[in-house]
Image 1 (cartoon, rainbow, N blue to C red):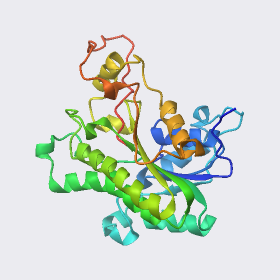
Image 2 (cartoon, one colour):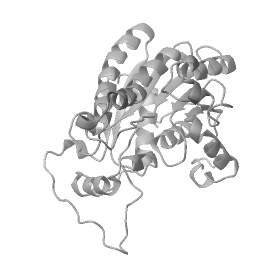
Image 3 (cartoon, rainbow, N blue to C red):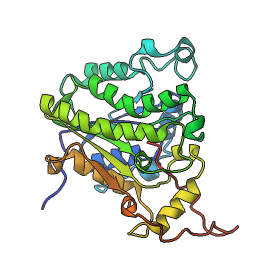
Image 4 (tube, one colour):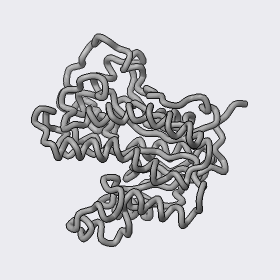
Length: 315
């Protein structure tokens, strides 16, 4: 039987702060395949996330098919806006949400992992994070600082992560990121430079695939996911419309499940995908293929069943 087997492999997933996003779904799928999982969590969310895990608040989302539970080898405070700790302003480093987290920079987390696990100890690196402080602003009204912040955290951080993780990754390693269709088509309301950041992320995927493929034998791919119930997606502000629109207009007229994204990530991380690199893989029920809307459903009426919790992936 052909199966995905990641036993003996280790993955780091940057961008897990709850059990409702793609980062969690990817972590769970990789664990299902046998990989050991470490995650990076945004420092302001770190205490909440670790407390929820400790108190069993995420236990309903943790069971694996073999009866065991999703476990993390480590949870690390990570703010991908900073390559090194010295890049973080004084007011950030002294903020109570950051002050006790150690070196929360990209280089700091990579150094901690190197000390704990040693060189060439990871096989999978997942970039499932993004931030656009002005995402609700039209591009024309986006400030330079807001635009650069979106591109820096949502796109450049992949480059920084990969550079910092070079000593940690084994030959044949897989690097994955999460993108969104706004990189190539206009999504009104997805502003603040986030569409530009996703376009840069996809372009960088192709260039990095060449550079690290030749130098190290690593593969670099990105997943373009459809709308999903993500707490981070609520920042965009038009969640309900996008989910209902996608459900009505995809070739497979049903909602995306986050685990479908996780399964695709597990495949891309496995030897079964050894010939795949530099690819943007759509996991969106075929929504990207449509050139004309079939329908746009009416807003739900008061008291009707709603999909208010679903949304457009930010990461």
